[in-house]
Amino acid sequence: MSTKDTIAVLAGAIVVVSFISSARTQPATAASPLGNVSGTLPSLAPLVSNADKAQARRLIKRLRVQRLGPNTGYDRTRYGANWADDATGVPYARNGCRTRDDLLARDGRNVRLRAGSGCEVVSMELTDPYTGRHIRWRKDNAAEVQVDHVVPLNYGWRMGAPRWTMSKRLDFANDPLNLLPVDGRANEQKDAAGPANWLPPRRDIRCAYVTRWAQVALKYDVPVTSADRATMLAQCR
Image 1 (cartoon, rainbow, N blue to C red):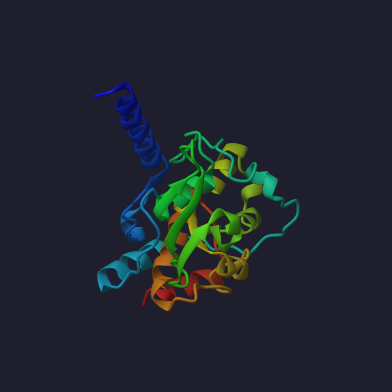
Image 2 (cartoon, helix red, strand yellow):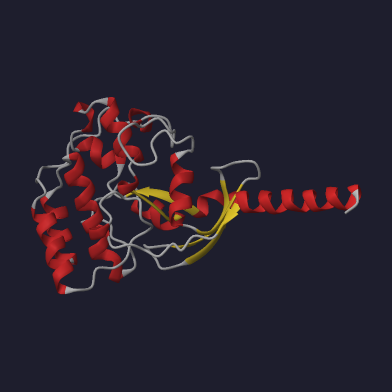
């Protein structure tokens, strides 16, 4: 093989390696919340069996009930910088990637990363668990997919987070158990509402959604209102 041919082969190999490092196909099959207590499995699958719904109701019944407290002093920065990789006690913590990118990579299919980056997601496909909508997402339209805090940060604040350590607040804000990439419009409609005031438009996912809510609330000892708890139980009948 000539020197020229050798150079061409090496150049081709570099291109292949570069492509592999910047794109991957992930079998992002949605996981049941009951089998995903770490939050590292993708998205949210419906709970359909009577046994699963009964297990979900048992979780929900363990939630403490409390009146929603005041909003005094709330600010997003009380939970740390937005999507910063500085939590310590949750999966993906301090892995060198922003939390948002970790979640896009977890739930997306045909994920592509920015050339030269091992983290930054620039395009993917997502089946939104809240609406069922199939989204072909690109970073130049970033708000089309937003990462929802299942138990909103503001809700956590009004239920006791001002008394938490900063480390606990960082974990709560960056815990993959509490985070779902979803349709941006649905997330904006939810805002900081509890289940009594907002549920996913997709009815068959509602039991799974409130089950995930209960898992997060139990992990961080976040109470819920009596109306929220009653609504959650009603979704898993």
